[in-house]
Length: 406
View (cartoon, helix red, strand yellow):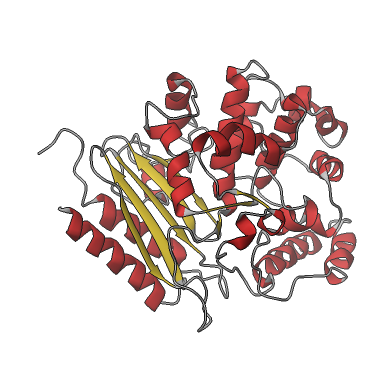
């Protein structure tokens, strides 16, 4: 398919999402091997009449893309610099984790387990209702019961990437935001990327795509967690209920503050699991680390290759190191589960998504990388995003032939 046809396909896909009210606007960057990159922006930054049009410089809350744009490369750089090993026990670097529930099992959690979401830690907890700061979060995670033994299953866990962020700060003796700026953003020319944009002189002047009006979606998540505790007659339920009912939930439209409540309320906007803001242009610059031999940030190519491969066996869903792995090439259960990158990716493809409506998928067999930034959480969280996202990826990747084919 020629470039014009691909541009029209991307425009059509974004326009469909806008017309369905899934998001007010979006920006897409597509790179194909040995061809100029394609950039398409459609719609507005927000739902208001006076909102500006989306451009490649519109600043988006990347949500969980933070995991692969900050935490993953910093862990890999830490391996290169001899500061840690992927096989290290997490308790070696964070001894506080072994001071709570199930010390013997928690000592078996390795860094690679956190990276592949196979640690046995639960997916999410509303810790922000009860405490804030690294030490409080470490204490609360230490008190959590394991939901399975390390390496047995895959459960996507924010808690695991919070711990990875804490580990990075320990081994480098520096704040995570400063590490990311020094080792990733500045060398890559990512001048419009960072945590806490309201306190960042450059980012503060950007057009920032708004998020949800208040946080009713995450409040509902907290309520569901408490209902589960109450149904199980868990003695902790009353404390969580009181904390939830007395909490000062945000009410206004969120713009320039991280949407994720644990990152915002609990960790001052900076975490290994969420908190990063960036633009389409800068995320494209970041992906050179994974796709270009002359990237200014050099991570050993064998380490990059290892990180991009599926590592969790027959577990569902299929995970690489940090990244989500393509379901293609997996078991029938994994294929049936699918992946956020759609159905047409090769078994070598890797990617990730962010809850706010962001995604990266790269397929070496097609020689293509696709970045999509939207704010599907504005003005409310739209649940049709997952179906739109898979169709979006299917339509665009199907237009790109595998490398070496005519």
